[in-house]
Image (cartoon, rainbow, N blue to C red; front, side):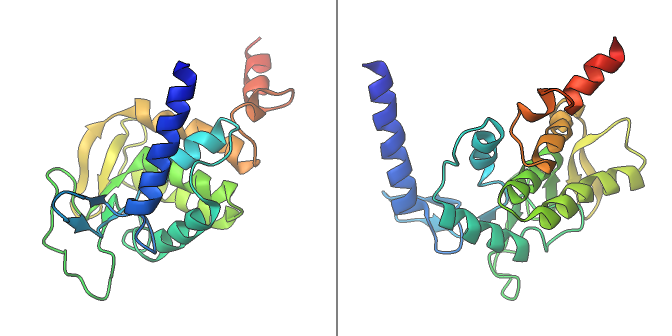
Amino acid sequence: KFAGMCDEWFCQGSDALEKYGWGESCYKLFNDLETGEQSDIILGHQLDGEWMALFHGCEGVFPPDRVEITLETLKRTSIAKTDSGLAVFCNPDPDNPKYDDWNFGFWGFQCVHVPGVWMKAMIYMYRDQYQVGRDLARRPMKEIVKRGLLWDQPVHLDTAVGSRLGCDYRQNLMIWALPAAIEGRDVTGPCRSGGLVDRIIRAAK
């Protein structure tokens, strides 16, 4: 009975997201139905749930056509915004920067979330855009190495002034999910005979 309730809630939430949250080129940052206030500021990590599902061997959680549209939108906005990965928030129209003075507390238009970039890179790989995903995955690591932070990794990079938040290497362990996506496999791939995890364990013995 409880499982049935959860399924119903899941379907209701998905339906509401598609009905009220979709903004033609990506999902809206928010849409307040009571006040009518909406925001078309682009959240760079709006498809993270898609990666979680694919990495764990499940079907994607968003309509495939909207995933493809959103990925294309991110390429021309959030990814084009910075060489360090992709911006957490981005102006929807680079040629009409009406939100350039917008800042949501710590974040803003200059912040890059390193492990989030790798999650997005893996979605591109899983969605048959391997080259885009590979190049995106390299960006934050290249910046980390350039800044001499390889052993003291920041979880956030600010494209304007340097790292905004110091070390959080636990989140940056996300990089170890990349080998599975590179081979087009889910989390079980590296654990299979001959996979990366299997080879590491055998080498340790």
